[in-house]
Length: 357
Image (cartoon, rainbow, N blue to C red; front, side, top):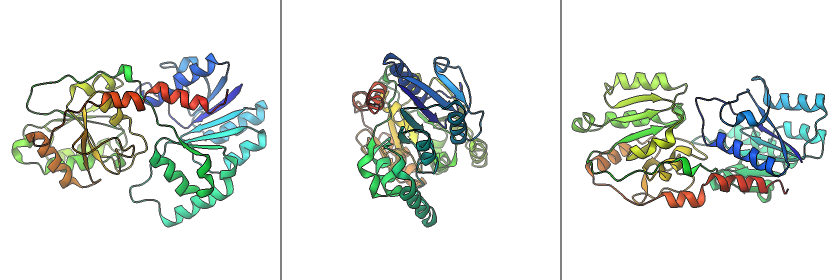
């Protein structure tokens, strides 16, 4: 069997995450079962196990156009075409069906805006669904939330062919947090630094803390992105340089979560949040938003973490105060739950089962 997987996902040795490990293991699983995979990415790379993949490099041109041109020139036919991080229900899928009777599977990783799409965009998505959803054989959401949003976006007619497969993490590589006797909790936040991740809300919340806490609290910020400069400027303007350490990207986060007591994840929008799941696998507690980090419904307030309303900086400030003073604390073990529900092996197996080998 020969299949094609299109991933509008930049390959970067400085940012190795859960999807990279999934791609590597899924390719290995296919090889074990005599299935050849052509991987279409925006760029080429050989870091990690990417050297073992058959990668067709679009050289940063439009990935869908590159794939169609490749199929036309090479007369390539695939039994399955699978897409990750590709816009759903566009005319691209109709064009793919013209090449051959391939089965198309789309995986939706895309977050939704906190306040929903505009009316015009909702109408456009529904029209796209009516015109092009028939060319897609299976829709996959990475959470129940995503599944519901796919149907809401593109129409009830796709409900029967829409499924959920949770993303998975490499549990074995995540070290478990040891119990510590220190009285002052430690904090980190880890995400791509863009506005929708809400780090600016965390900075604002810290600015509202009592002076005695501001003198001692330190939050390590892991990640890079287009919003990094603005966040650093915000910290400087609020005189919070002693409260935040910008650590940049770190490919070893899996061994870092365990040295912190709390992950703060103030995201405005999310589909599947690796940092939340990985922190819970390390038995590190999580402070996150109802709308953002909790779309998987794996955080129960005051049980295995703490929840606040997105963008509500006063609410987040009060949570940090309660945690700092020891008023709010929990000791529930969370690793076992993550092992049972969000393992990388489970994710690979469920995606492989879609191929009906």
